[in-house]
Length: 231
Image (cartoon, rainbow, N blue to C red; front, side):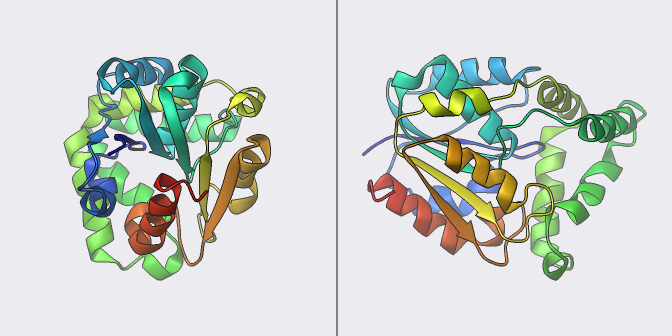
């Protein structure tokens, strides 16, 4: 079966893809570890070092930044691409300012405040009281730790604008957006779909930023179709 590489987002671990890992148990699945690197390029290079010669690649949020960088570095290695709740744009000044504020919190020993604060901006109002989802976010942050969080934020701040590179992506590509994503709205995610000729855009209703956990059935169904070559 075709190998599948999953790339988590900021402060996320394999928990982010738990429903999909279970659903794709008949495939070789590798989950990238983005905790030890301080640039998007080094995260991408680590994936290329450990992954099979050819693989399907799916990334969410920061994982999407890494997946696009993998495509820039070694497009021939990737058989199909899925970009979930992510953007090709570089960081805007106000985003960088907010990231540095969070970095300072982590450096000041207040890392435990970050995940609960981020949670309110990740999910729509209807999911704010979802304790299972909140606990998953906090557990992923605990597993990541403050030092890795700081490295990840600085990598995100320094990432390049991938929009000029989208047209070179020729493999079958799935782009996923959530209708209620507070961080990456549909119109911004759709830029990726519009930039990649061989892409299909799936809009998940009543879904925030953590689509794989918020709407696992819908996202898994889209990924299954993608793996079957239906997108």
